[in-house]
Image (cartoon, rainbow, N blue to C red; front, top):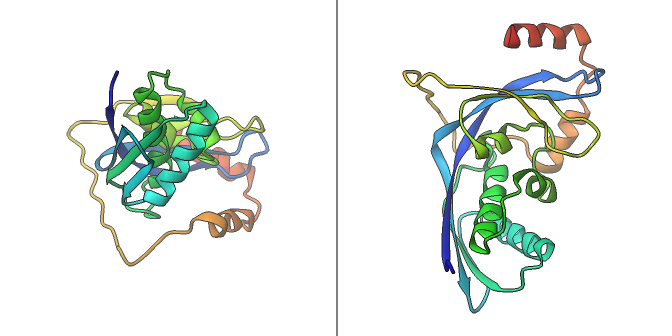
Amino acid sequence: MSNSVTIRVPARLHLGFLDLNGDSGRRFGSVGLPLSEPETAVTLSRSSETIVEGAESRRAGEHLSTLCSHLGIRGQHRLVVEQSIPSHAGLGSGTQIALAVAAALRTLHKLPLDIGSDATLLDRGGRSGIGIASFESGGVIVDAGKDDSGRPPPVVARLPFPEEWRVILILDHGCYGLHGDAEIAAFRSLPPFPASGSGEICRRVLM
């Protein structure tokens, strides 16, 4: 029986939405890709008491508690967040730490991975499916957007990223992107997006 599991997951870069109109029955649709760094790394081990340490410990601990309750796991754990993707920098830190904790817990207790269900349980993938898809595998990813089912957006294309290409990140550590309620309010306040604009974006990206 394994006593410790370490999971490493990459940041993801979201390159934009395809359809903010949504009159087709799906909304958003995204293009993006995982990055080799920065990354989130968590180590989960069995313990005599629950201990959560490291950056993002509050959020990681909440995910661990939610998952244990959902999966009926009663044992105690020590969860160490060894590395974390910068928060609110547009690199998918929230989704990746949630899925890293889920994968670590399932692996430690020899349960099958269920990335889509865990993402829904932990309230990830509300608009974009790129973070979830990046957790599963690499490449340039296109998802088909959200419908009314509540499930994460399905991946409709995944292409190899050219090995000779490089992505350069320039971060302002004093600047934080919208998140939480402010982000939700910002999306709700967007003016109607014309279907013709969505069609043009889709043609340029996909054709």
